[in-house]
Amino acid sequence: MCEASMRFARHRKAALLLTLLACLLPFAACALPGPFHDSTVLTQHGGRPSLRRLDWGYPYMDSGAWSPDGRWVSAHGGSDYLADNPVVVSADGRTRHTLTSWHCGLSGEFDFVWSPDGRLGCIVANDLVPGTKRLCLGQPPSFASCQDVRLPQEVGRPGFGSTWSADGQTLWITAIHDYSADQVSDEPDLFVVTAATGALVQVFPFVPGRDGGAYLPQWVPQHQALSYEVGLAGIEGPGQLVMSTVTRDADGQFVLGPRTVLASDQTQDGYAWSPSGHWVAVRHVNPDHGDKIYLVNADDPSVTLDVTHAEDVGQMLDPVWSPDGQTLVVFGVDDERPYAIDIASYLASKGLQP
Picture 1 (cartoon, rainbow, N blue to C red):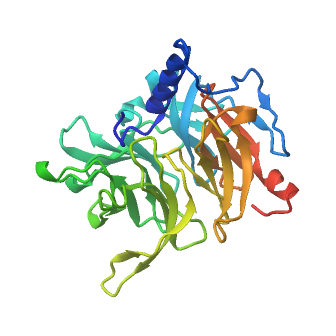
Picture 2 (picture 1 turned 30 degrees about the horizontal axis):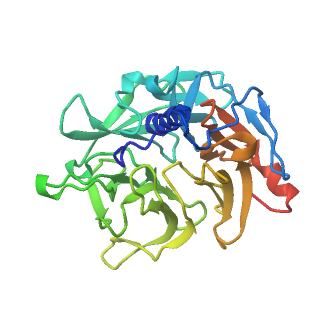
Picture 3 (picture 1 turned 60 degrees about the vertical axis):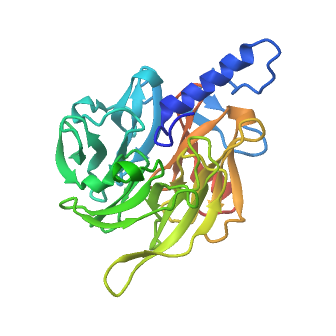
């Protein structure tokens, strides 16, 4: 069983390869992932939208994130999942940068995060200076180098997701707390640091055995609220995607309000907010019976809309919503490639707004 921190592609793909090998054994009965794609356009049944394969220049891609201006996408990319690197590509796929010189480390051991002003950062435990943590910030369009911001020792081990506040003043990081040797926990807490200096502002502890740690925080567009996943157990889940209002108390400290559950059966496969904050795209985890990407109405989580279904296009992970609200990108498990969905047209066909 992999540690909770190893959330990214190599471990998900390794788990799928183990499934394939197990199914080759005599008398083994299990459902194989599929279908395996041989077309650049995938069609679906039940009125669900078609998917168009994107050529972003890497045979393997995973875990994308769109820049605020919609010009760039950061991701993990490479020749295969064993040789992936942090990469950034233009939205049309014509310009590509492999960011090995940033020394972000292995996938699952760092966070990519876009600042509101369009800088790309990776949050990493600094292998060049053991025992330190850093935020490395680079500028478009060259992304040739990045500038280090020292992070507090308490932040511990990153790789569970991070997000800037909408005003660009603070950075919210989920990481395993750097406790003393007799207090080690494998479940991440939520840290708030200043954007300018990386100084620690606040820590939200998540109680082991009750909360299961915090993962993949995102500020909800058009809301003073933070979404995040809780209750995960390793890479298998189950977990919940929740949303909490964020306020300040009389002393200026941040306060997370009660949790609204948006979706269950979450396993750190990513989720994406529409720019309006009206919809969130998530994955329903059930590879044998109905694995899918679907939309949840933030104002009424009982209102949902299916977008992809594994019976038609195989398992899809890590939805990414474009800043203009028009496109939803998902990443295929079968062929390790990104696919674009005209999500605005699909919603319009249902009489809904993005």
